[in-house]
Image 1 (tube, rainbow, N blue to C red):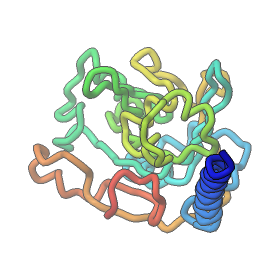
Image 2: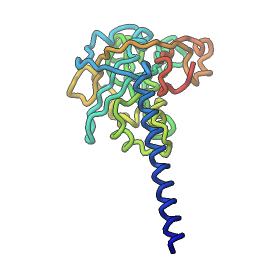
Image 3: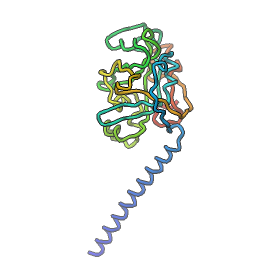
Image 4: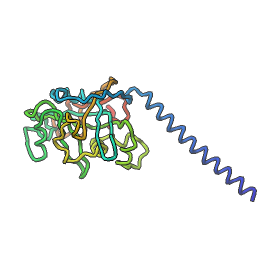
Length: 242
């Protein structure tokens, strides 16, 4: 009986030690993130105005890196750092949905002044976030490929993923749309209107920006190699390195 009791105590101590090791590991990972300049942020509580977006799409894609999305949801406010984006520039860009000025029920949202949303779906109910650039006469938009949530509680409740890696919450375009609870009903949303449910603010931190060709557009012929993808170097939420 005494031997059994001692064994139970030993097992309980081992469980406590294991839990302590997990807590210690998580704290170390958190400290490492806090010390990673590529994942730090200092929000500036001023909404970005329309002039910010009314530039060529390639310039806008670069400017959007490091900006902070503010999204109002029933569960509360979600904030996320834009860490990866791609530029799509019709009419000449063969990777763009509006290539050759193709205007359909889906692509009509390209023809908006800069700072409005164009949302499309992939693989069923996965919605991708795009932000228009320039003017309503220029069918151009930036695809937001990856974001870094500034807090994780609400996003974790929304996504309910099995992976323990926080990066899996938002390291892809469809994941971004789900984190921010976007769908086609948000087409045309004006980011310059603070009452629209979503807007962008600035960030004091400056990052080292990486540049590469865009991802998964082999069909775009000579446009597949255009260096129109931008991302924060060494940020672990970026969907693909290099």
